[in-house]
Image 1 (cartoon, rainbow, N blue to C red):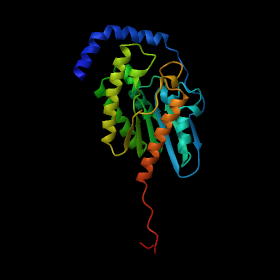
Image 2: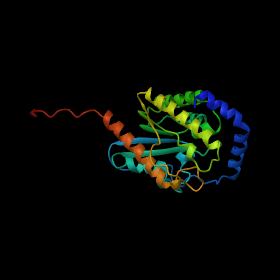
Image 3: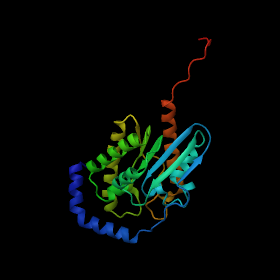
Image 4: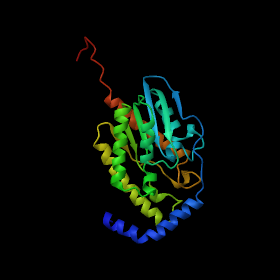
Amino acid sequence: MTHALDLAARLVLLPVLLAQAVQVRRCALALPEASGPREGWLGDGPPLNLLILGDSAAAGVGAGVQDAALAGQLAAHLAARYRVHWRLIARTGATTAETLARLGEEPPARVDVAVSVLGVNDVTRLVPLEVWLARQRRLADLLAGKFGTRLICLSGLPPMGHFPLLPQPLRWVLGRQATRFDKHLGRLAAARADAIHLPLDFDMEVAHMAADGYHPGPLIYAGWAGAIAAAIEARLLSDAPSPPPEHGAGR
């Protein structure tokens, strides 16, 4: 289906979609953000300053504790190779615009790697694609300029078209828009030398989601953190300078 037909379908379905959205918000199980520290040190090795930014998924809703959430598991993965100073700035309901404002209030501090988990709330709040992309670019520029971030990891949007909490046709409409956002997020990352896009192409089985049918459960967080850690390590290792040749070594 073309974007024009997709938009036309959404306009026709608008009364149904609004009613379903209100019903979902009224009846959804409200899970808390993961408890525990949002900053810490882990591991030994070269220093690595890690910042995780985002919404309820970044905040660990559905995981219970931060050690089982994205930030805690990601820091633990990277700590096998680095001395990781990690920090989490995330809030349930956060949009890209709100995260931009929050980051703008932070004092400058060295961030080697930033992981951004944003987009779902922009989709549900009907933020236009072009507006969202402009804010994503501003966020990346802010990280690179103010914080000297050398690697910006833009986590892909989840497959909202498979979320069991969402009724049809709301699920279909949000799923289509999330897919569209994610495709353009990948293009944004590809246009920057300091960014990578990490699509959520690992196991997202419904049985492994949180009790609310909307957020990841611990197993999904584990797979997500492992995929991000592997991508970060691969990029950092590829960017590392090669060791000088040993003197006197033969061919």
